[in-house]
Length: 123
Image 1 (cartoon, rainbow, N blue to C red):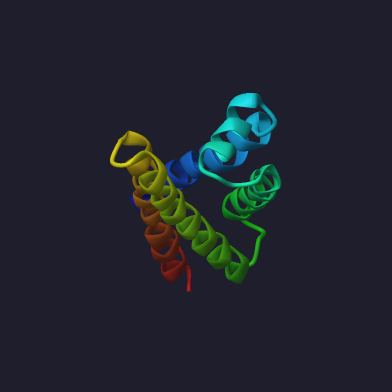
Image 2: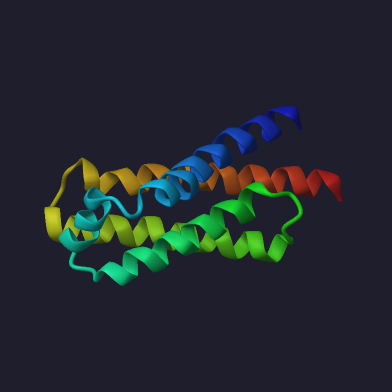
């Protein structure tokens, strides 16, 4: 059980930092805006994405959030990582940027599995 909690907090913490904190603090930089434009998305899409990323990251990290909301957050991040990878593949071809979201999909999967193992032991 202790091992699962460690895996959960490390993986979920990484997701929280990469998908919650960093976007919250960097979303209005020119580099972030250019990244959205580079992929062919309008600027407002980037703004909406940041709001949902921050809310999703908070829902994963806060224990008071209901399980159903956490499930939606996990699903949302899974879609985000898959579509980010597809977008980069379509625009940039096969490079590191295209595979990077899939690395985080793996981290998210580890968080999700450990979350369910912890909660199945509590019931």
